[in-house]
Length: 295
Length: 322
Image 1 (cartoon, rainbow over the protein chains, first blue to last red):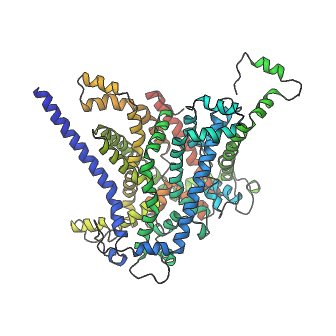
Image 2 (tube, each protein chain N blue to C red; image 1 turned 120 degrees about the vertical axis):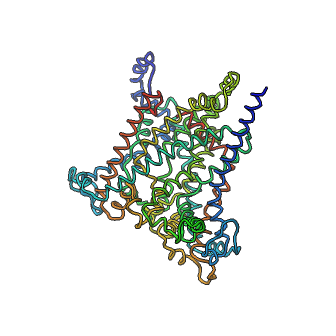
């Protein structure tokens, strides 16, 4: 009786300790973002003094208004939205289509095709030969550079493949008897029953497209084609606030500084993803389950 | 492609049928939609994966931008000999391996510990909240993170303000301008960004452990610590091994996106890494052949590390990638 009680006391102490530790982790995760957020909502000139930790000292939305008045920023946002929407649609459809073909046992040449793909996961040509290829394909300064080179991923194909294997064969048989060909079976039968894995890959690729600044930095010189992340990279990493100020519409009040405009742009850029991912959580956790079972 | 041994002779006989079209060809025509779908993928891989592999030959040539690859003169191993005389490459390789090893030693075990502790929480709601919050930084891009770091570390940023208030320093430090702080900044920001995300795969593995194992252990009088050590850890050993192989083979892969955002000319000596160096030498200075040679050496060593790590874990724990 006594030992039982003592055990439960120490159990409770461990529980409390872990809970505290997890609260610290949560704080350490959220606070750096909060700090940026309150500074973005503070008046720009006032924020230069520093010392804003918990709440804006002089609340102001001027930086956000300036963001939406700046042509450069709005154009870059448009490119980001366009490349994410088009990129995800193409990537998911194309990779799933190839994965479905690879998943069918009777496919002639299947083992060779799989081998060709497996090699690509462990060895590649590297940056320079890849750049020369993109140039020879006339994809430099071309919107399609965001879409076509990202249309396929063998890694994602494997995730699709392990999902497609679980689909009962009877579904396809019924469609075949109705006279559907393999491509019709793919988009009329397979895609609709594969929504969990489609959502997972769409989220992964969507995050990639939304956050990628590298493609825009290397293959794009035309400022009207650069996505918002590349725009921000040029501001953040090269500290060229000139570009930021140049992007500001004339007549913006002096209380908006390049720093506050930068913070506001960061907030606007990140907000959509942060609002979307918690709702897709159950899908990507499931995607990882497929991956870990495969591994 | 494999045809059962018993049926094969039959197929051969019919292969010389009335139409004169070989049987295998007729089978391919029969699955033409399927073949078209598969071959589109193969064509993509040939273009975007295999043509760049062919492009590696410029490491053995003197390539310049005005002529096609085939017209460039061969120079043999000249560019590889140059590697050994390249003074910059010394600190570039040191930074790449140094940062990776520290990331491996600190960054690899932390998500495992985090997943194990999270699994000990009784309250499912609290657990789900902690998980959701821990994923958040993964969804921020490195550019955004670079902006956050710059805000934190600026002269009026919170780090300098707090350290000055506590009298540790008397004037603000420009952290991103000093080489000695760079590795610490890279490793801390990497752990902050990926801790929760890296833990997902372990949590997925833990959730597939049969509850009966824990029930049996409880009846035998095992405590929490014992269960964690004797059931949970051994059950996710396979997952840990696989991720360890991948981590080892990635030692030469610095996080390009991250380094490019945080580096600048002032912290160059401790911030430049192989991937960034290839980018600078190749695309910015136009020395395509030499940069390709640097990249090739990196890719070959990475492949060797992968095969080596795979072989070792196969022998030690019977799990392997292939």
